[in-house]
Length: 338
Image 1 (cartoon, rainbow, N blue to C red):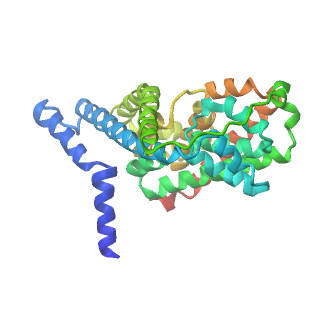
Image 2: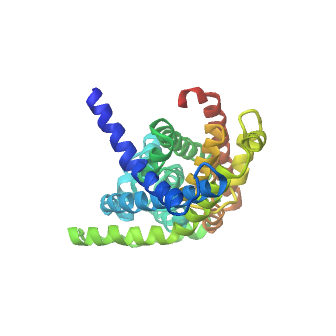
Image 3: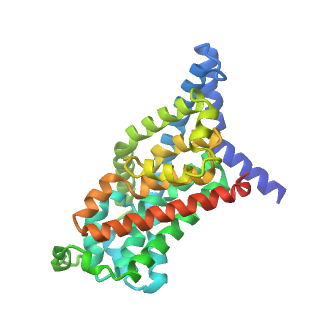
């Protein structure tokens, strides 16, 4: 057991946290540029270079591997799998499939239309749509490298619970009448997708890396830049006063700030890392990340094209309410994550 723990510690330190990269960038900043990383300028430059390279390296490798697996789950196959389950089991399967399928929040329209046309319960569709951008295998491993196993695992668990609970509640409310009429009238012809060859799967995986990195690179750099400023320039006392554990409104404030933001989860991780290092509660950090990824403004605008305002309002209320509850719960249980 001790040997396995040592192996895990090495893998976590060298492969996920990339301590070798930390030391290499430190050598560059301190020895070549003469800027101590313990001071503001040197610390900000080190944070920006190290976090940017670490996230891009992890992102590229993980997306490539995960996308190869995801090539076995095209939308048509996903619909067939989900159609076999009902009730809470259907919500759970929708949430779990959302974690392993290559769809972001802005894929809401074609997915919603396809799932509705296939006759899937509305709640199952929403469980999928909540978990797909929120809980991602690549995101889990990046979170693991930044925050450690407890917080990364907790994020995945609460994300799935939120997706299952939110979808179940929407299903119980019987809100099908608030889906736009044209969605019910569309008939998408079934397609028999050919089985991909190994070469085609590898090409698909590489294409996903280029597409996803090309879509999120700017948000990652902006997020890392904001994280560098928070980490090295904003006093800890100020952050604790605004969104620290002693502010009873911190979780609600983080959720409301996160909703209108447009960023991928990989862009929010460095910001969350810097806030967490400054003493912000783990629940507040998770609330900000979840609000940004699950309720991004572009996704809500696209979703409005296929559902009426009443259903969109219920969806936002259920997800935002769940995020706030999770935030306060995890702040209350903060001792577990120390």
